[in-house]
Image 1: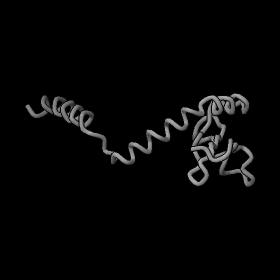
Image 2: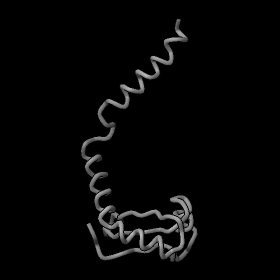
Image 3: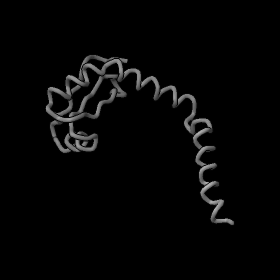
Image 4: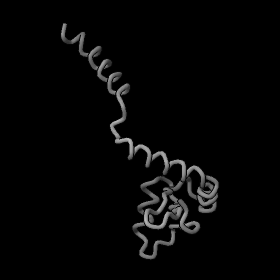
Length: 101
């Protein structure tokens, strides 16, 4: 009997976990939403940088100190970050524009 109830119990726990409120505090959820909107507003610039680099993607973020858009071209986020950290002069990073927030 217990083995037949196990899958049902697993499904119920999964549904309850998905239906519960976010585990993120509201302030953090708002910060993530704001960051996503800021990056989405610069999507054309990010896509142009990827196209110019000849790579299949990039790691893009807003610099916390200055609010500048930084795009690190690479074939994956790990590839982009590895290239960026391995380079002593960091030429693959492209900082775009003045402080943008």
